[in-house]
Image 1: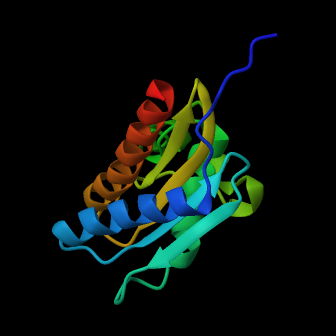
Image 2: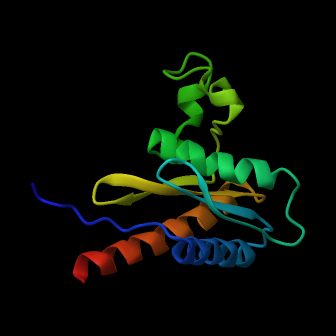
Length: 148
């Protein structure tokens, strides 16, 4: 059986992803909280910028968890969970932990979700931009692993 090498999400990489997200948030004038979770949705790292909103410590990890659980960006879930949508009411599942607005992205390695990043505190556009910065850095790490 062939073995598939995947990029593992360790603490050092999680901190680098948080730094990328915070740097982008700062560039966009936002103060955010950033959570990075593993493939099971468990918290690996969390950082909250000075002055970030009080909801961030709850929303950022839940955005990351939602992205992992559904293998998609949280911004893509809004229409699906709206009344009449395919997943209407989903946001009330898992103890209300699913967050269906921008800021959560899954992290993919070799065709599998191995983690997620969640950002909360700015506008939807700012949160998504910061999460994308982290996901882009993860993709770069993945590309280096593939080339190694």
